[in-house]
Length: 114
Image (spheres, rainbow, N blue to C red):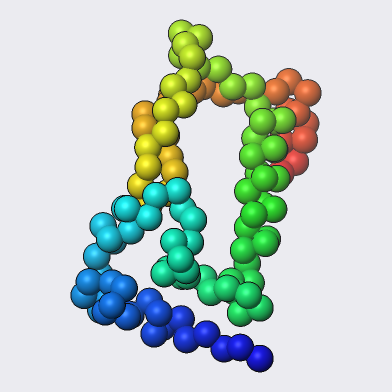
């Protein structure tokens, strides 16, 4: 059995400057969200990882699929959505999009039962 002391890794002064201080800007350079040499593991790893991670990954997909299926989506003035990426703590769009939606006519009965 291999036990990893995550607290020691995440509080190692050889890896992090002032590891006991709250400095979220230190994670800006981590880039694409990969585990940069396993320096940061907030939800653990292996068998002792976050028990809700698999459920969350499935629920995000199901929720997105439900939104796409149940609603009709349009941009204002039928403009294209700018998909330019912004690197930071997470990968997000550089510019917010404004869309309008209305429930799909065939889904009105189903949505009223939720």
